[in-house]
Image 1 (tube, rainbow, N blue to C red):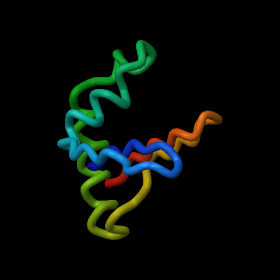
Image 2 (cartoon, helix red, strand yellow):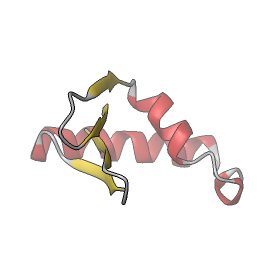
Image 3 (cartoon, rainbow, N blue to C red):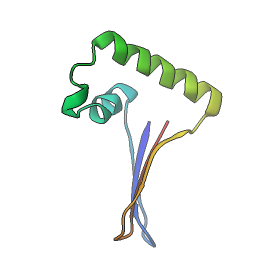
Length: 74
């Protein structure tokens, strides 16, 4: 997975993230702490399958009012 952060009109920063670490960050909300390890493994396998089918799939895209853009892609 890749996390790309940039401000409009500026050069951005791309941070490559291992998928398991990215999943931990995405599901770090307290409502998902009850998620068993087997479910996280199923989600990880599903993301790997999605990457094989669609390639660089955008999972999360955020545009803020002050010009920042954050994109998380497979």
